[in-house]
Length: 380
Image (cartoon, rainbow, N blue to C red; front, side, top):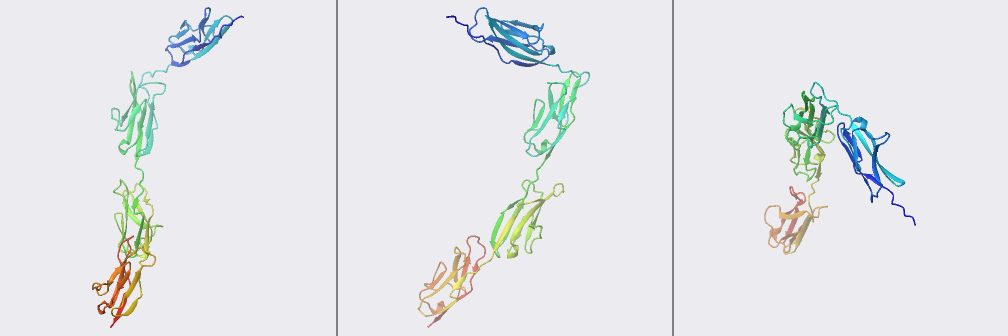
């Protein structure tokens, strides 16, 4: 039975596609894939021409083209041939034209953009290049040639980068390139760094007090102690009577129902360069003062009989309650005060008189509220 040789395969080692400038060397190596049999040969050619350029040489699969010219650009083919079969692989050469030298004067240096404005901590980037030159040494300076770049400013391949712009980075940057005729200098690239407008902060954002208690809000602008701070009611209304403000502090010594509402702090630039900025809303809630109730308001007992009064604050089961005599004397012997219940087990003539229940809200503190007097009569 007749045996057939394996099919021929050929491969050009990468890189197959070369982009090199005029005067460089192009080189490829072509190899047979698999076992090489006698009678098989490799041959290079330039597609579309009768052979290879005069500056090309090939040996055992290797093709070298020295001092390449633009006319050498094109497609090159490696062909392997044997008994009644062949295989090919192609490579491409692109010869880049030589940049025209700058004649008689320093290189013209361009920058982009000529001006940019960023906020503090934003990134700023400038690009520098010389038209017609693919590669040359470019160098950046601050304000003028020789000026050192500030800390935090970097340059690489003609690009000036400022990852986190600061106020001290603002100013003009100059890019230079040199040749045998001198140093070319770009027009100044101007960087403007702005401090972003800070919104005033307030503390607290909500304040709940009982009528008669003091209330206070604080306003400030982080990093700007010179800001002029002014409080107003939401909707640009004037501050109610009894409200004081000084250097960002809003103070209400004795909060009343008419003081409840929304307040806004406005920060203004003392120089007038920046527009006024309002804070978030500060909300004041004024709860009515609820005096404790007593039951019964008065009672009459015979000496040595028990007597009892109850005290409570409607809607506030957590209020702290405490009984006392209206005349300031201490409670009598055996009299107990527990959870709003005043208990007199054996009333004496000395226990007769008025008793007052005092209530304090533990949630918000402040002044205590007194009940109306509860009166005890003791008969013999």
